[in-house]
Length: 139
Image 1 (cartoon, helix red, strand yellow):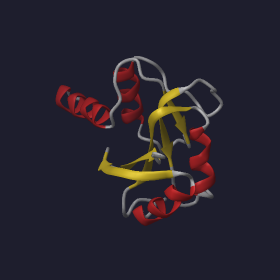
Image 2 (image 1 turned 180 degrees about the vertical axis):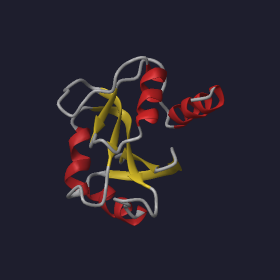
Image 3 (image 1 turned 90 degrees about the vertical axis):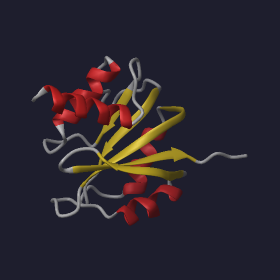
Image 4 (image 1 turned 30 degrees about the vertical axis):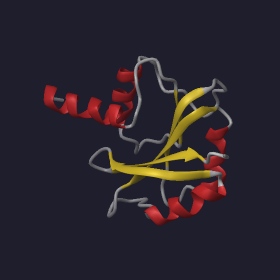
Protein backbone atom coordinates (compact mmCIF):
# COMPACT_ATOMS: atom_id res chain seq x y z
CA UNK A 1 0.00 0.00 0.00
CA UNK A 2 1.40 3.40 -0.94
CA UNK A 3 1.62 6.24 1.57
CA UNK A 4 -1.14 8.07 -0.31
CA UNK A 5 -3.40 5.00 -0.11
CA UNK A 6 -2.62 4.61 3.59
CA UNK A 7 -3.46 8.26 4.26
CA UNK A 8 -6.73 7.87 2.36
CA UNK A 9 -7.62 4.76 4.39
CA UNK A 10 -6.90 6.44 7.71
CA UNK A 11 -9.01 9.36 6.55
CA UNK A 12 -11.87 6.89 5.99
CA UNK A 13 -11.51 5.60 9.56
CA UNK A 14 -11.52 9.22 10.77
CA UNK A 15 -14.50 9.98 8.53
CA UNK A 16 -16.37 7.27 10.41
CA UNK A 17 -15.79 9.34 13.54
CA UNK A 18 -13.30 7.00 15.19
CA UNK A 19 -10.42 8.41 17.20
CA UNK A 20 -7.49 7.25 19.27
CA UNK A 21 -8.65 5.42 22.40
CA UNK A 22 -12.07 4.40 21.05
CA UNK A 23 -13.29 0.86 21.62
CA UNK A 24 -14.99 -0.53 18.52
CA UNK A 25 -16.93 -3.79 18.47
CA UNK A 26 -17.26 -5.75 15.24
CA UNK A 27 -20.19 -7.91 14.16
CA UNK A 28 -20.62 -10.03 11.03
CA UNK A 29 -16.92 -10.66 10.46
CA UNK A 30 -16.23 -13.06 7.59
CA UNK A 31 -13.54 -13.64 4.98
CA UNK A 32 -15.06 -11.01 2.65
CA UNK A 33 -14.64 -8.00 4.95
CA UNK A 34 -12.34 -5.13 3.98
CA UNK A 35 -9.17 -6.05 5.87
CA UNK A 36 -7.47 -2.75 5.02
CA UNK A 37 -10.35 -0.81 6.57
CA UNK A 38 -10.25 -3.01 9.67
CA UNK A 39 -6.49 -2.45 10.00
CA UNK A 40 -6.93 1.29 9.57
CA UNK A 41 -9.60 1.45 12.27
CA UNK A 42 -7.33 -0.49 14.62
CA UNK A 43 -4.35 1.76 13.77
CA UNK A 44 -6.38 4.92 14.36
CA UNK A 45 -8.00 3.76 17.62
CA UNK A 46 -4.86 2.07 18.96
CA UNK A 47 -6.68 -1.14 19.85
CA UNK A 48 -7.96 -4.30 18.20
CA UNK A 49 -11.60 -4.53 17.22
CA UNK A 50 -13.62 -6.36 19.87
CA UNK A 51 -15.58 -9.37 18.68
CA UNK A 52 -19.26 -10.20 19.08
CA UNK A 53 -18.65 -12.04 22.36
CA UNK A 54 -17.03 -9.11 24.17
CA UNK A 55 -19.15 -7.37 26.81
CA UNK A 56 -17.16 -4.16 27.25
CA UNK A 57 -18.98 -0.87 26.75
CA UNK A 58 -17.89 0.41 23.33
CA UNK A 59 -17.82 3.78 21.61
CA UNK A 60 -19.08 2.39 18.30
CA UNK A 61 -19.89 -0.82 16.47
CA UNK A 62 -19.18 -2.01 12.96
CA UNK A 63 -21.68 -4.44 11.46
CA UNK A 64 -20.69 -6.17 8.22
CA UNK A 65 -24.05 -7.02 6.63
CA UNK A 66 -24.91 -8.95 3.47
CA UNK A 67 -28.24 -9.71 1.81
CA UNK A 68 -28.30 -13.34 2.98
CA UNK A 69 -27.26 -12.70 6.60
CA UNK A 70 -30.74 -13.11 8.10
CA UNK A 71 -32.93 -10.58 9.92
CA UNK A 72 -31.31 -7.15 10.05
CA UNK A 73 -33.54 -5.88 12.88
CA UNK A 74 -32.55 -8.76 15.15
CA UNK A 75 -28.89 -8.23 14.34
CA UNK A 76 -29.05 -4.45 14.91
CA UNK A 77 -30.31 -5.01 18.45
CA UNK A 78 -27.18 -7.00 19.42
CA UNK A 79 -24.70 -4.07 19.38
CA UNK A 80 -27.09 -1.94 21.43
CA UNK A 81 -26.33 -4.02 24.54
CA UNK A 82 -22.70 -2.79 24.69
CA UNK A 83 -22.93 0.56 22.87
CA UNK A 84 -22.22 3.63 24.98
CA UNK A 85 -24.71 6.49 25.09
CA UNK A 86 -24.16 8.59 21.99
CA UNK A 87 -22.34 5.76 20.20
CA UNK A 88 -23.01 4.83 16.59
CA UNK A 89 -23.47 1.60 14.69
CA UNK A 90 -21.90 1.59 11.22
CA UNK A 91 -23.63 -0.93 8.95
CA UNK A 92 -21.19 -1.88 6.21
CA UNK A 93 -22.80 -3.43 3.15
CA UNK A 94 -21.46 -4.54 -0.23
CA UNK A 95 -21.80 -1.84 -2.88
CA UNK A 96 -24.32 -2.16 -5.70
CA UNK A 97 -23.36 -4.88 -8.14
CA UNK A 98 -21.30 -6.79 -5.54
CA UNK A 99 -22.36 -10.18 -4.12
CA UNK A 100 -24.53 -9.70 -1.03
CA UNK A 101 -25.64 -6.18 -2.01
CA UNK A 102 -28.17 -4.69 0.41
CA UNK A 103 -30.48 -1.88 -0.68
CA UNK A 104 -30.23 1.29 1.44
CA UNK A 105 -34.03 1.05 1.75
CA UNK A 106 -33.61 -2.21 3.69
CA UNK A 107 -31.49 -0.40 6.28
CA UNK A 108 -33.92 2.56 6.37
CA UNK A 109 -36.78 0.11 7.02
CA UNK A 110 -34.99 -1.93 9.70
CA UNK A 111 -33.46 0.92 11.71
CA UNK A 112 -36.63 2.35 13.35
CA UNK A 113 -37.83 -1.10 14.40
CA UNK A 114 -34.51 -1.59 16.22
CA UNK A 115 -34.84 1.86 17.86
CA UNK A 116 -32.29 3.49 15.57
CA UNK A 117 -32.27 6.05 12.80
CA UNK A 118 -30.02 6.64 9.82
CA UNK A 119 -27.87 9.76 9.94
CA UNK A 120 -25.45 9.44 7.03
CA UNK A 121 -24.02 7.10 4.41
CA UNK A 122 -20.58 6.94 2.83
CA UNK A 123 -18.49 4.82 0.53
CA UNK A 124 -15.64 3.44 2.63
CA UNK A 125 -13.80 1.18 0.19
CA UNK A 126 -13.91 -0.23 -3.31
CA UNK A 127 -16.45 -2.88 -2.29
CA UNK A 128 -18.20 -1.57 0.83
CA UNK A 129 -20.57 1.26 1.75
CA UNK A 130 -21.29 2.40 5.31
CA UNK A 131 -24.49 3.67 6.88
CA UNK A 132 -24.37 5.35 10.30
CA UNK A 133 -27.15 4.52 12.75
CA UNK A 134 -27.71 6.12 16.14
CA UNK A 135 -30.27 5.61 18.88
CA UNK A 136 -33.33 7.81 18.89
CA UNK A 137 -33.27 10.66 21.37
CA UNK A 138 -36.26 10.78 23.70
CA UNK A 139 -36.91 14.42 24.52
